[in-house]
View 1 (tube, rainbow, N blue to C red):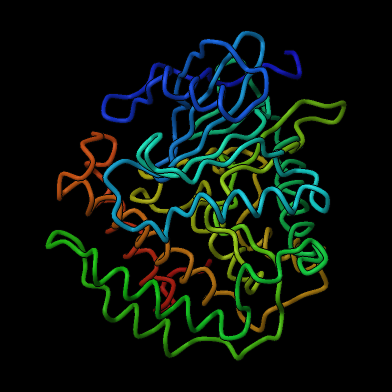
View 2 (cartoon, one colour):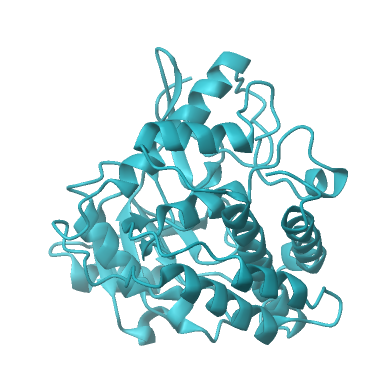
Length: 360
């Protein structure tokens, strides 16, 4: 397989999420000196938040990112902020895609958007593509590479990169517990748990302020990294989807990542909502990932169950917010119809860990 082979080409734009190629071409003609070409637009599958499109103009290709249609929470889909992070971090973190243009004029596409380079490679989804295989040894090596790159991000000198104003590390854990609890209460529908006991547990079991501060991705997982094959197996060459990046506690970032990590012996409800191929032979277990991260960074929490419970609850809130928009009719994408069930499974899983019935 060639280095530039893709697991999935961009597909025709989804109903209700289509961009007008003539409008995008007009914007590019105004923004890029000498640009005079028609464009073709297709849409990448996957993703439930910001939308990602492939823009082709002759032999040139770019990726366009914009908020979802129907959203009211612009602060949660700040394209300008995401663009600034990518523009500034590229010199310190080689896995970040390079940016091209930002458009703050909402008259163009209805929302702010930006364009960046297209990173070609494999992106893993629920199951491996039919033409891709991972031996147990390769799967373990890929897990280590995933942790290595996340640790490398956490080691970035964010002040030197010009990102010191992107967040407030002091009190980060408390703000996250409070903020996600408020968002859950605001987005709750009648068919999901109230999660009050879980939210009280998170509030009562917060670790002491650690003093650690790092640039964190906040959605770091297999389907947000780009892979290419090498002599020793698949390696990460890019990290995508920086919309939730901020300054905060790196263990909170790791806990958020582990919420997506469904291992082979997890209960059937978790298996049913698995989004990544983390169940394959050779894939490290969650506890092994934590141990390797601590070995790699020299950091070690007194206990990790809090961070994993936080990650599960946070993911439950994210899918519930999307489900809430679906229930209200703000989005009609049928992919979101079962998200209420996903929220329930994640909530129950978090409760089991918090109660000591399940280990992370």
